[in-house]
Image (cartoon, rainbow, N blue to C red; front, side, top):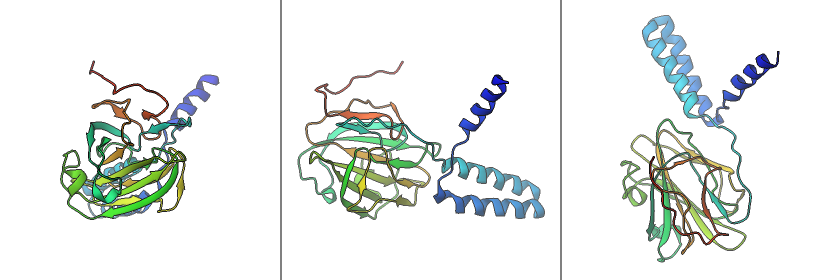
Length: 237
């Protein structure tokens, strides 16, 4: 009996909620699938697979976020594509002092719900229209369509998180507005169908993640301001 209960729990735990933003897309694909099952079954099956993929894409799993003061967590699921010191874009209002930027590339198979890297008040929210080049390219941070949030923490630090559209992504959705308060790991937006998310740390801060590492939004710790640890070295194994 306990084994059966354990199996049921395992199956139920694997079922992930779908974010409300995806409901309309699932409904449209499902309705078209039903229609074409009547008209031409092969296309109906294809559209059913599309509907299932859309449900998978908009999945919104729960995450366990560490709450200790001084932590910066990943804002997105995906592969860390760059950890580099750069001058932040002018629209962020962060000045000309170089900062460490951590870039996370999201494939079409990653969870696309974005989460706040730190707790604080959204001091600025900036939308910049632009191109839709490959989000993994360096110039995407300056040329692509993007939405930036600059979050001011309780210690006065300003940390920017930038949602960047990509080749496939054509819609950036942000739930939080300028002036809102957000908690670390709180959902603040999503990008539909492939993208990139950048985090700009305060000047002089280092990351404890490396290029190639997989990030989990709201859980993977990007930086720890309470430690003097230098830039982390890593290797593939």
